[in-house]
Amino acid sequence: MRVEQLASRAELSVDTVRYYQKLGLLHPPLKEGRVALYNESHAHRLEEIRNLSEEGFSLAQIQSLAASEPHPLLQSLNDATESLSLGDLVNASSLDEDMVRLAIDAGLIRPISPGNNRFASSTLPMLRAGADLLDAGVPLDQLIQLAIRHAEHVENVAKDAVALFAEHWGGAPSTSQTAAVEDIVPLVTDLVAEHFRQTLIEQVSRHVLRGNDLP
Image 1 (cartoon, helix red, strand yellow):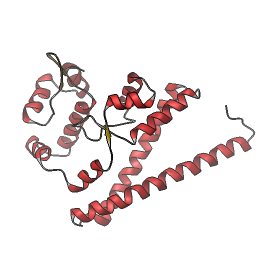
Image 2 (tube, rainbow, N blue to C red):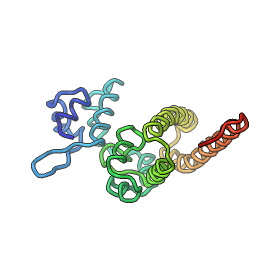
Image 3 (cartoon, helix red, strand yellow):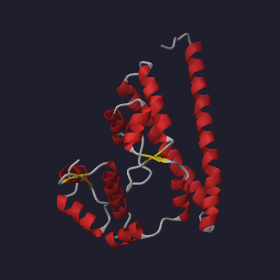
Image 4 (spheres, one colour):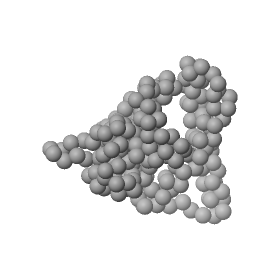
C-alpha cells in the first residue's frame, strides 16, 4: 500500500507517518522503482505506537524502546523458530497470495515482529490446514469468521497466561525468565491444543447422539 493508504488506515496524516519514519519509529518502506510501498508490518507498528501513546509513553520514550537492545526473553522467543517470508508461505501452503494476505489482514497470522515482515514456521501448518478445509468444502467466509472468533478468545487466554507468568516470575532475573518461558510455552501450547481437541470431539459426539448427521 502507498503512504496515503497507510495513513488513512491508521487514521493519521501523511505528514505524521513520515515524521514517525524520520524519528526511526517506523521502519523504511519497500521500494519498487521510485514507489515506496508499505505493508502489514508498518500498519502493526503504527498501531503499536498508538497503543503506547495511549498508555502514556512519549514519542521520545517510544523511540528509546525501539532503539534499545531486545530483551533476552523476546530474543529467545523470536530465535526459537525458523522464519519464512510471504513468498515462502505462498509457495509451500497451496494457497494463492491473495488468500494468504487475507489471513494476514484478518489477524489470523502475524509477522514475528512488526519490523521484519517474516513469519514463524509454525504459521505454515495453519495455512495448510486451512487449505485442506477449503478443499473439503468448508465455505471461505464461514471459515474466516470461525477462525477470527477463535483468535479473539485465544488472545484473551494468552493475556491471562502472561499475567499469571508475570505474577510468579516478574521479579526474577531476565535469564531465569527466559529459561522458564522456554520450558512453559510448549507445555501450555500442548495443554490448550489437547483441551480444544477433546472439547471438539465431545461436541461432535453430542451432535451425532442427538440424531444429527455431519456433512
